[in-house]
View (cartoon, helix red, strand yellow):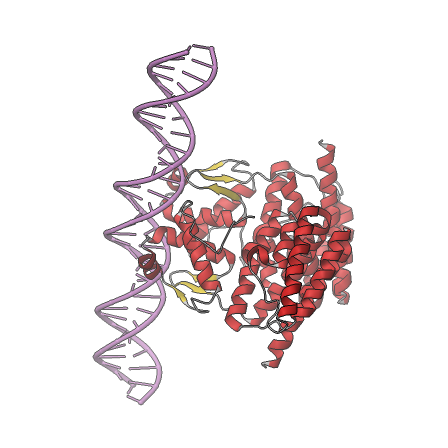
Length: 228
Length: 228
DNA sequence: CAACCTGATATTGTCGACAATTTTAGCTGG
DNA sequence: CCAGCTAAAATTGTCGACAATATCAGGTTG
């Protein structure tokens, strides 16, 4: 609801920095510009046929999102997430998404809950069909977590999670190709969370969401440990 | 530790946007520029003797912090926090600071804990002397919450809370002059939190920090209700 | 008299150019 | 052959000017 469709940045209106920002964000998150890759102002300005002014503003926003790091008089580079930093993000997500689930249990309308159920049923069918791949992280408002966060009706929470942290997690996924492998497990957990929200059981919704995110983090930790 | 001393923005090195950003941030948070006040680019550029380029970058950072809102082709204005938004911030704080306390219990060094104890003792003496005013929110690393967050050793958490949310809370305090009035109560709660951290009891530290922030929010809610 | 339209003014958005700094390439000396 | 220094090239930081848009004042009309 905040950004109608980030998939197509073809919005003709709005300002240049908006478009360039959306463009670069996608390019970075999907690995088009590799980790640690340089964000060259002259090159990008030339490619997109704009001046460096608006471009610099777009880069500034990328920095605010944590997608690039900038050193004075040197330039901006795509952030290289250490595993340490990824785990830090998971800790923040555990806290925020837990609270988001709690608020969702208190604030979601019955229509929103019905939509969420519907989404979950779709996911269920998809898993039955294709138990192998199954249930990879979706994007935008197809994503389960995205919907829960929206359901919190807390605009600051929505901003933090949907505009910043989720992009970083996506970035990491593309950089490392982390296969989650806990598809069916995650699906069941999602169902339980929706059950709690439907009952209006805020306490339980938070506990289960936290456990869900924690499990995901521990899964990542295991995979990192396996790679030595 | 992140920003050595925000109090004195007299750092001669670093770039112009850095200095202007720190300057404007202080001016906004302390109410020098009133809520809803216009951030005029030509005026500020003239006053500080700089061009509009770096100024615009500084304004962009203010927007990223949530201290100003910007409309295309119109300009930037100091954010006017509705009470609704303040409560949203408290919900986010409850989640994040709870997790920060948990992590602090796991990660703080014994030196850091000792320092924290020392700070708390200072606060205790100040309360005894001056039970009336007492225990107003301090700034920078004199503040209790600030120290806990630092103790989490989670850089993303530190950024979110210390560079964004705390400034917004300060802004609101200056705008509305919220007298906390729960000085001694808060002090006791702080002591219990440090006790839990010292014992390494992460679960308890989180619970008590969350209760502490929640109590603060409920206090604000009461005061808002009284004013009708 | 109020509401609306119209033109003047001011502000934001964008651009190209210059200055300061960093990086790179080449050269000299050991 | 490699280390260190020097100069050239490229990139970032900053500036002033122009174009596009919004705001405001005044006048006109119902």
